[in-house]
Length: 137
Image (cartoon, rainbow, N blue to C red; front, side, top):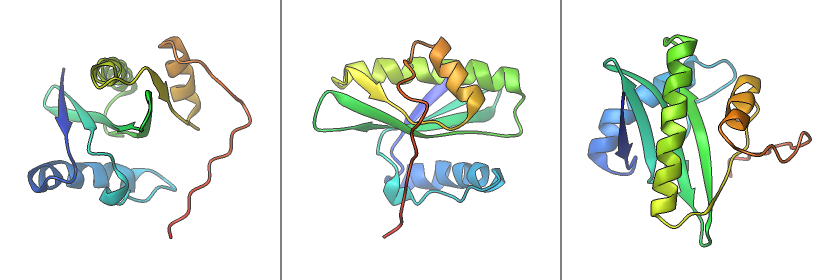
């Protein structure tokens, strides 16, 4: 298992990673691919056994607070392998966040299994009643 950090705004990284990520988003019911302009320059993707398994983006604010967003997985990968890769990815993201002076990470999730996974990884569940809203303008 290994990780690759990438900047989706770099032409080389865009050409290498965006087609993969776009296909994952398009395979999810109710999802559409995320506009690359919305993605942080701090992307991470995990590769295991020659397959890309999961990805996410770390956003640094103008404070010590960071956000992990757009967590996505390859639906062709078995659940056990995905779980191991997600655990590895969140561990790397935490180390990377500390390296760039982030001392708290915020995430909003709606996937039940990922919520449970994150709690087991030390994330505190802050609310049961959060509604997320997003609007293209």
